[in-house]
Image (cartoon, rainbow, N blue to C red; front, side, top):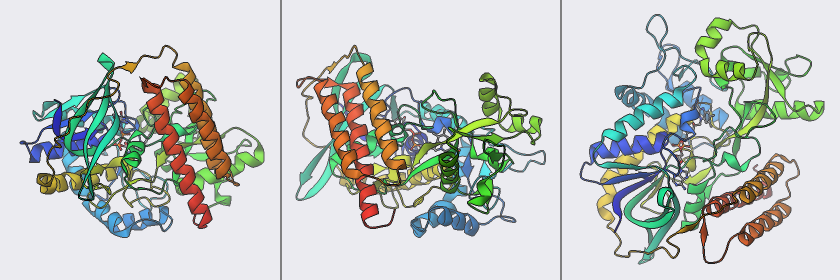
Length: 504
Ligand SMILES: Cc1cc2nc3c(=O)[nH]c(=O)nc-3n(C[C@H](O)[C@H](O)[C@H](O)COP(=O)(O)OP(=O)(O)OC[C@H]3O[C@@H](n4cnc5c(N)ncnc54)[C@H](O)[C@@H]3O)c2cc1C
């Protein structure tokens, strides 16, 4: 029967970094990483701007980075966590560098530090504009060499099984779907680490890839873990507008840090009307200002203006962005780039302590699916890759200290439906997904949020999805859609509570 000491769900920065650290520290433990598609299909892979770390102690300081983070978080950050993450950052960065991750340097051999919205100093280490891809590939390379790690791609975890003994609940295993054989199986485990990323796919316009459906959050909630701060979804102000795609291609914050302006339909800069930091204000401020401008102009998008920037330096710093724009016939040196705000980052998530432990003691949550207290209302740009590293480290230390307390459950569960039903027509679920995205977006962006109406409409969508399935079968698109429904309900519920308490 299948079993592993540690099961990691997700192959982004947090899951892989955790795996690397615990595998080195505890070669005696067996470790499995399951990921629902190919290993690189993550939010991490798409990260452009880079990772915020204080490296220049002459111009910058931990205190300045802490201050910027707290300011961006709108008074809702946990100061102890902010302090821990920012002061630990150089050590975690060093570990990435030791496995071969490369970050850009200038001609003097110093870090070529980027500037992003909300940061008072240049402090973003980056690899051109493909920082995430660089980190993901170096982590995957090392993971594949470690003898006590097994990486299982195309393995979608469906649910966590918990056991309660003497009023103490622990997680005992998971049901998962193995795409290749279209079968559902059960694996026992002593510890589970959720590193399943965010839920941007709940929104009509998002920068998040298709995998970002909030599965980990929904599973944790079903298992009884506490979820917090889901009312704070971060919108990135500058996703490329084409009117067609979801996900939308991101134009990194670093482009504004490099000197680009945001202009309206008349070619005028307008952000200073809303915040004296203009283009370099925090994401929530810039996104809100753009939304207001669009409401009053009735237009679909605003523009990024890069025409005054040195074209050679621009394409050298942002080769991926330049190539993507060029492929669409947009040349940043002479054309305006159409942009809109898009759902980008889930600030809330599964509530954890400073070691990534959820309210269920052998269930961990790290990376974007976790609510650690670092981000408050609004994550400071380039703090999330950092958070993933620091919490992966913290969790690995804690698993090492505590795993002896958790033994394998003697219960071996047999899936009720060992085969998933192969659906010929996934289209019905795609349509339902679009309806849900419309509904959640309309609710979230409305000034007069009507939670009761949203609950009702979501229930209708859910009932419709149920009618597409038979009682005696498991359908994979239904499972993912149900997770999206569960997370939508959590967002609406937590928005409603916050509005009732007048804190949102
Ligand atoms: C376009 C873009 C640009 C960004 N740029 C930056 C940046 O410059 N700097 C920064 O700090 N942050 C950036 N972010 C945010 C950052 O990339 C993410 O917050 C971070 O990478 C999340 O990492 P993670 O380890 O939590 O999960 P992810 O990288 O999102 O990985 C999630 C993993 O979980 C797996 N998974 C999900 N559900 C299941 C399931 N049911 N079963 C099995 N596996 C499952 C997925 O397949 C995937 O492997 C950016 C995000 C985007 C979308």
